View 1 (cartoon, helix red, strand yellow):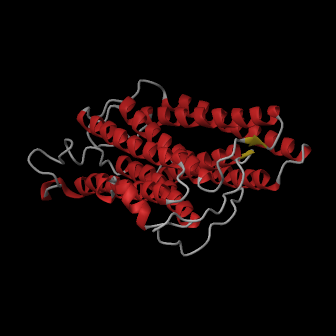
View 2: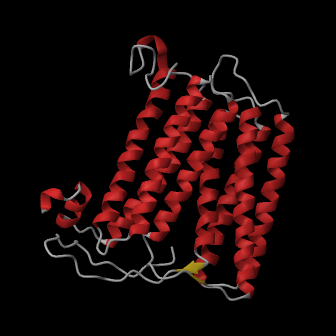
View 3: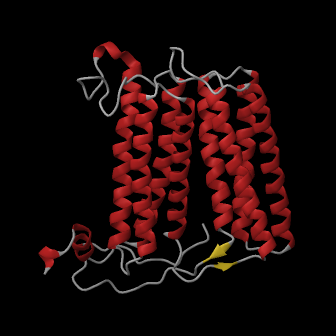
Length: 329
């Protein structure tokens, strides 16, 4: 009976989104994952990390910031509110993926994975406040946000391809080289969080515990890994040309080169200008774009076949546009 169906099943019987709509919903989760990283960085760079003094309330006895808390309270609380926007976007993707016919359990699982990562990171964010911006917890908060971005990018890719068994488009050694690129970039991101935890931008104007390391030495290690990532990217580019790989991964590698060049310029600017807040924030944006590009290159080296057009179930509203074959984007 219809009344015994769960809400998602009832929506699926009444609404049939197009394949393009599901892809756009998946892309929206990627955009919001980037936004949450950048705005989280803005909280730290404006010294608003303890703008709300407790969690889940903003201040004891008040869910929202009070007048006495000033702009820092508004900034920190605004970042908390963005979590609800992020949940709404992830929820839209889950609903669209579930309503799409035929049902793709792998896609809905990725949507639910995003939801639970968001919930987990909200708790980590609360612990960050309750521990007075402990740098290790702050680093974990950023890394969980990166995990959310990773799942979102994979969801975006999966929304653009079929469900056949994955087939490599290049030889195994080439795939292994792409794995090395992913691992090196992940290490670069991890070291970047250590630089943040030891560096001068603690997130609050009051004295905050820092990671007891020389942040300039850690920065040099971070730069060394930048060279490793660039070297692996160049090696992969020439390898793909040598094996006559499809055009899509080579095009995505060019996009990666563009992001690396942008990030490199910003990195040197922030170093020689003594880490101004705005430039550091742009550097955080660049780090998310580099990670997205690396994942896209890696995922483009295998395929799962095109999306197939399947008649909608009886009683479902027809989509406004017919599903199209997946591209290699």
